[in-house]
Image 1 (cartoon, rainbow, N blue to C red):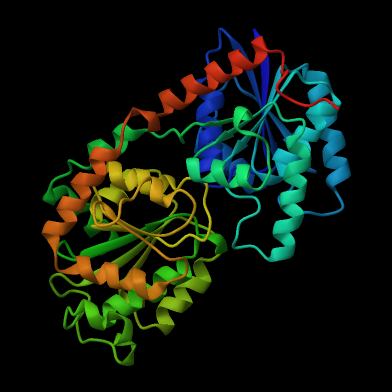
Image 2 (cartoon, one colour):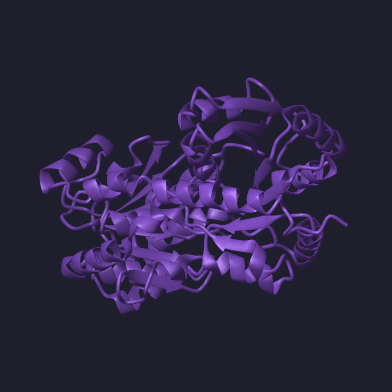
Length: 419
């Protein structure tokens, strides 16, 4: 049996945490002994996330209190703590996830002579949305630690291409392994009938015959919910005349459409996070607080996809937007900013639209275009569902990671530069 350590800074709601947990839970215990190291103090929010994400009982969880998200003076201590853990564990593979853990744990693994060091790339660590100085610093760091990385696992093709273009690693040391999801949950939810959808909407206080736009992502600044609220306000203002061409200029006055009127647009934000108070205030200031619903964290997220009509993603950077795959699996059209990976899932005018980053007017125009066109919503939803295949399942992801581990161990990590 070979020993594997996964390292992640935090288990925040999102794809990196879910992919990590699916992997540590799913690897064959006849072949792999799996440990997980996470940052944060005992008793912190991480403990809640450990419970939410249901880590398997036979996975040993190590807490590294010095491993925190933001850069600071504790990095040397975190590096030392990681080295001690790796030395004591005698690991054959260290598989890192995310920016901070990805750098420090790879450094620690190299210094402790771990045979295989893998970095999972779930999002852009030197995104174009960062300041130019931050991009240069993080890109330089990534190039440095790439020298002793056996292999990179990118969740999407866009992400891999950008890392290679930036001089991080080389083609031979990259694999694209799609984020694994419990797709059956979403495809099953797509078959929910009108009565079932109405029942979910009633739970949320939404009329059965409303047109519901959902943004399903954790409320943190990089997810760009403020753009969603602005676009929602434009759609609400323009809903009285249904004129998509006038959507961008409709801010002069709000239409008289009441939230209870048949076919009126409603807006749902699914998830929790620190931005919620600011977003509630923004909705109030834009005059749409009475038709914006905040659901909080949901374990039944597939029901939220099933009850909505259109999924909207206004994220500023991603790795591979899982929410767009889930929308497609639930047969819902999607509108997204042109964040990393959006174009791998959305084909314009087929199952939705990808619009320029931060272009709220373009988002609002597409939302308005679908408001009074249920036939197009159904056609686009069906087209999206036809794009989703088994490469997105948890089982496929775990099988491909297992195969990668075995291949790299057979090569004794010779892909990496030990100099």
